[in-house]
Length: 67
Image (cartoon, rainbow, N blue to C red; front, side, top):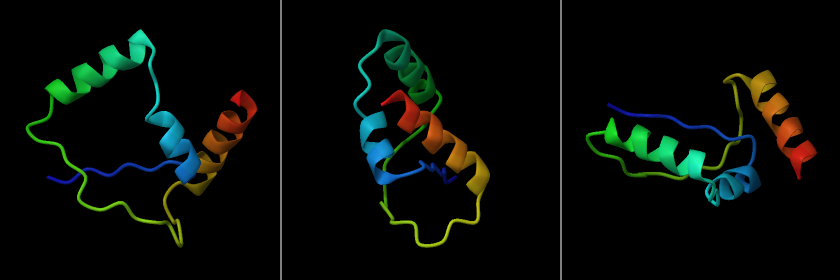
């Protein structure tokens, strides 16, 4: 089985990997307990994004407003 994750930008992806709050740590632990195995095979750069671009744009706007 393969999973897929998408962030609005590389900067947001990097920021999202720096969470330190307790709720995030608990949620991440619960998610990982559901996995048999997890590893990143490829880190790709988006050239053309045809998946939920309007949603990604909204997330980017929210992230930019929060920073």
